[in-house]
Image (cartoon, rainbow, N blue to C red; front, side):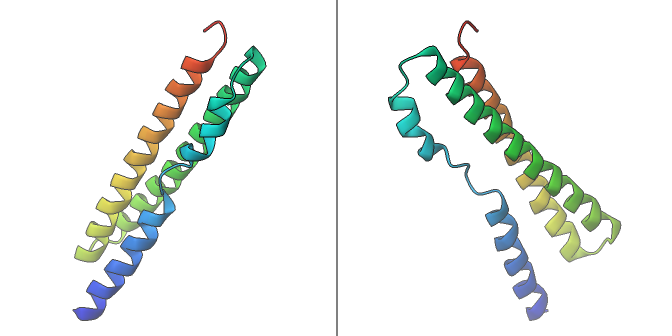
Length: 108
């Protein structure tokens, strides 16, 4: 039983690290120095790239959920639940980045 708990903790930590907060803090210098339309378009591109990366990560987690649910047991049910939550968080991050891209789009 102790090994199952340890394994669960290790896998949980690895799963949580997989969709760490997106590096929006690295965008601050770009946001602060936005002056022209081309600067705005560069921000749009970066936000769209972040959205794609978050969506791809969510897709990976959805596949993980499928694998865990195929082999049903108590540990896998817990892991599937964690992976599902992470997938939803990544999708939320993708949506937010798409919204930020839209708000920075010149003429949009």
